[in-house]
Image 1: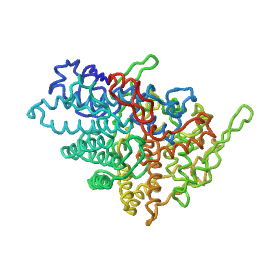
Image 2: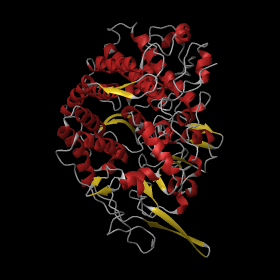
Image 3: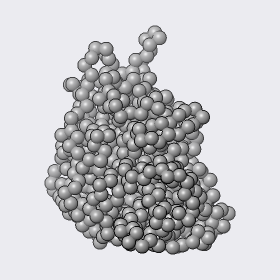
Image 4: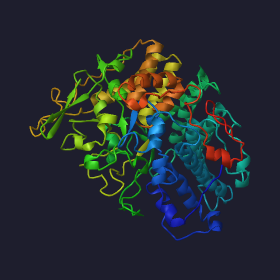
Amino acid sequence: MKFRYILLGAALVASLSSCEDFLDIKPQGSLNDATMASAEGLPYLLNAAYSALAGPNTTFGAMGAPVNHWLTGELRADNAYKGGGGPSDNAGFHNIETYVVDATHGTPNNIWVALYNSVKRTNSALAVLATVDAKDVPEAEIYKAEMRALRAHYYFELVRHFKNIVWIDENLPETEYVNVKNNEYTRDQLLEMIAKEFEDAAAVLPESFKEAGRVNKFVAKAYAAKVYLYKAYRQDETSHAVTSVDKADLEKVVALTGEVMGSGKYDLLPDFQMLDMVAHENGKESIFAVQYSTNDGATMSLPWAYCGVGHVNWSALLNTPKGPYNGDDFFKSSQDLVNAFQTKNGLPMLDGSWQTKDYDLVEEKINGENKTYTNYNIEAPVDPRLDFIIGRINVRWKTYSEPVTALWYRDFNSYGYHFVKRFLVSPDSGDLATTYPWGNSALNYQIIRYAHVLLWRAEALIELNRVDEGIQELNKIRTRAKNSPYVTAFVDPAYPDAVNVNGFAANYEISTYPKGMSQADARKALHMETRIECALEGERMFDLVRWGIAAETMNKFFEVEKTKRVYYVNSQFKAGQDEYLPIPQTQYNLSKGIYVQNSGYAAFK
C-alpha cells in the first residue's frame, strides 16, 4: 500500500472544506512542511480531514469512489440499475452491476485509495495534535476526539467494503506501512476497535457545536450504535455466513440509540419530502451529514466547462435525469424496488407476493410521428414513499410544473422508466445549480439521520425478541410517511397522459404494524421497512450482508431480472465471495506481497 497525500497549499485545503463555516479558514498562501507539522498548520489539517467526508478528491475522484455508495451499496444490490446510455456506457460500472469484478477492477482500488487517503488526513492531524501545548491549543482534546471519530468512520467504510484491511494509526511511520498485513485483525476485532474509537470520542466531545457538520457527542454515540449492530452479526471468516447474533452487542445498540433519542436534539421531519430540501438539510432529522454548498467562491476550470458552482456532490456527477437537470441519467431504480412499495391492507407484502407483480409498467404507442407512453398496472395500493423516492413517467416530479416525459431518459429500453428521485432538489426550487456538474445543489448527503437510529434500535429490539418495542419504533417511521402530503396528480388538459388515480399519482395506502407479531414476521417487517425508508441511500448491500441474506436475495433477483434484461443472464452472487469487494491487485503489489486476498477470489500471484 502506498499513500499519496500531497498538500497543495492552504488556499486549496481551505477550498476543499466540506463543513460549512468550520473553523472559518481563510486562504493564506502556500504553507511548507514545517508549518503543517506545527500548531500553525493544525487548522488546515483539521479542515482537510473533514473535507475528506466528500472524498479526498472532491471532483472526478469522488465520481470513481462515490461517498454515497451508489455503486457498492445500491448497484451491487437489488435496488438499482446502472443507467446511462446502455450497458456499454461505462463498462466498469456495468461489470459491478453484473458481478464481473476481480482484483484488477478499477473501482475497488479507487475506493481503497480514497478511504486510506482520508485515514491519512486524520492521522496527520492527530500526529500534530500529539505535539501541541494545551496552552496554545485549548481545544486540543476535542480536536483529537473529532479526528478519531472521523478516522473510525473511514475505517468502518473500509471494513464493510473489504473486510480484510490494514489498521494504521498516527504513531506508525510511513516507512512501516509496507510491513502491515491486512489480515492482522478479524472483522469482529476491527469493528470492536472502531466502536471503541467512537465511544472514546463521545466521552470527550461536547453535545453540540455552532458549526454545522462537526462530530459531536451524539454523532459519535449514534455511529457507535451502528458499528455494534454490524458487529452483533457474527460471520464465519471464510463463508461470511452469519453464525450467531450477539445479545450483548444488541444491548449496546439499544442503550446508545436510547441516549441519542433521549438527548432531545433530534426527531423525524414531519414531511418525508423535506429530506430533499436545502432549507431542512441541517434540520432536526440530520445527525451527521456531508456538508455541501454552492456560491461559496470555489471554482474549477475543465476543458469543456467552467465550474463556479461551489462544493457540490461530485459523487452524484452522473446521477441526474436529462430534462431540466440536463444529466447523464445513471443510477436508476430497479423494477424490483418499485414492486416492493406495493401494500395489502396498508402493510408491505411480507409473504413475498409483491415480487410477482410488476407495478407501473409503460406501454409505448406510435401515432404517426408522435409517441405516447401510457402507464399500466398502477391499480394496486402502494406506500406513498414510492413517489417521494422514485420518479415515474407521467407523474409529478417534486414541485415541478410539468410531469416526467420521455425526454428525461437516455435508454429506457435497457433500464426501464424509473428514476432515483431522492437527493435532488426540485428544478424550480431556486437551489439547482445552473453550471456543470449538472443537476447539483447545496443539498447535504445524510450519513446518519434520525430515521436510521430508529431502524437500528428496532432491529436490535426485535433480535432481542422485544418485538412490540421494536415495532413501535418502526411505526414512528410509517406514521411520518402516512402523514406526509401525498403526490398529487396533474389535472391540466395539456398533459393528457399524466397519471391520475383519484386525484393522486397512485393509490396510496399505508398503515402501522399491529402489536403481537411473531419475531420472524417482525424481522421480515424490519428488513422491508429498512429497504423502503432508506431506499437508494447507499446501504442496501451492506444491510443484506449484515443480515446474512445477500446470496439468497440477489440470486432470486437475478433469476427474475434475466427474463427482462438480457445483460443479467450470466449474473450470479457467489456466497463466500461477493459479500465483500476483492483486495485490489495494485495494493497487493504495493504491499510487496504481504496482503492476502478475500475468500472466494483468485489468490494473488
